[in-house]
Length: 502
Image (cartoon, rainbow, N blue to C red; front, top):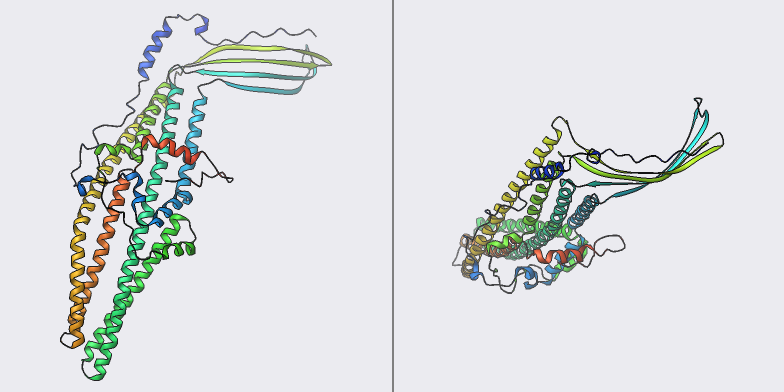
């Protein structure tokens, strides 16, 4: 059987069949105007020019980025490092970065031609002339396809994927900042709880001693039985406070166990050395807080990238309404065997094709509307996040300023009530004071000491809130380097580098 002639290339493009060339640039210009996208930058009228709240110490202090090193408690820094290595929250954020980067890589691949190898063989039977009998046919070919991105559909898709990858990176930094602040808050809360527990334990011991002395006085006839009932009731109340406070401290330890993923027994051993001591930096003060630094918050940076991604999604949806131009090509070899005779030969084809949407019942228009709505949602979400950021900074500054002013008064109150309690105890022991007056003095002194500890905790907590509200010292310029160091190396289990610092 004679060899069949090589097939002619298939050409399906109307442009290649003599369409007027002047239509192409005119059509392109008109369509590119239609593919215009909304602004990819966030609104600039949200962040304030300055702050209404006062800056403690006139705003003179060290940078927030190395704030943890200012503390007099190295255990706090170690716990934050441990949490940032082992907490599942950062592992999830790391996985989301890898997902976003893979999506961006997949979108970018659409800009290039695809090349596929194809091979197949089949057997068939026919009784029809001119070649009745069993036939065996086979072919092998290389197929190439390239969609020419005339109207930016691929370009916008790539831009959206890259923006979301950058946003996931910013969210990773935001997770680190939030986790550090959460660990610090839990640690300060535990130390405050331990300090209050120490006060309650001292008070309970004192009340138990008072109850014992009162019982001796009643037996000797020097005091009324009602005073013994009062003393025993006060001692029982103090013991009840101790039990409740100790339970609160145990709960605080378990919170740190969850945040750091450390064994509880080992964590308690580390915590024992500085029991009831609140961590404090060398000088409790805040850095100057210019309003433009809010743009350094990683969560706001992530919101900005989401606006850029949504803007690109609008462009991609609009471009999808216009024709798609593709260039396809194939080269291969095919053969057929019939009744012992074999026919084989080379095949090839190349040519453009144009796909123009004519009717889709409004599907593409609806996709554009949905993309535009998502863009409006992203802009509104940025405004909401920015306004919340301003509120967080303002609240932190107010609380920090108030706690600083209150601490001196709280110290004087605690000192004064302690001196009054000492005088009341002396009067009671010598018989010139009543037990009721002593108990009132004790309650006042106890409340003043607990109040002082609470104010000290609020001051550190306000500083922590300001640290988080200003992005924790995160910088756009340094973000890429830090993240590359954190994500690139992996251990034998495929996990991110376990030696990553803050």
